[in-house]
Image (cartoon, rainbow, N blue to C red; front, side, top):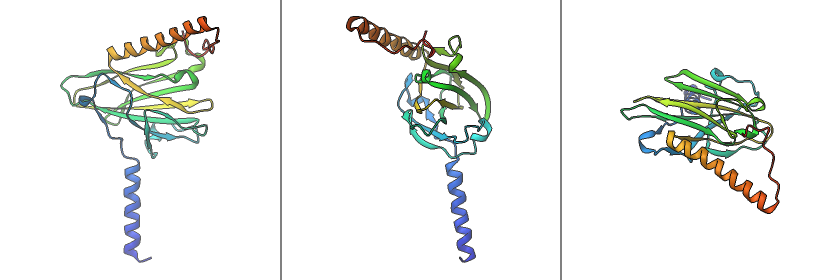
Length: 208
């Protein structure tokens, strides 16, 4: 291969690598209401199951939806989403992970300007009294200051099937979502009593 072609090939491969590792396009909060339930996130399957927060930044993420299923070969998967606040006031938001009750553990990392500003871990085997758990949903509070971008990285470690859902709410919508989910369960319990159909026992899955 002529030298100039080799240089061009190297250049295009380098550009592709940079693009694959680039930061995700941030969601503009000025164009969103008080709830985000269907949007694009990025994910990376950690086959080694050992990568940490620093190492994950070097990996190539792929796009998926905020509610997704990745099968049984994605035991440890990282998800990321970025949110930009062009407004004049800081935004206080809540990350909801409503499928958390069926996973082994959840880790959340909050980042701004390439700096880790907060993080949390939930071991679902011992989460009944965890402050971030609410009836099987992990609820992580975070902020997006005025004129800044906050990125969230979520590490999901499952037992078998990577079944994932990520939603973002303001305070009012967060409360409604949590109460609404509880009412749905109460309705099912009522149907259970009326029909005699047995529901699954979630007593060891963080539901209170």
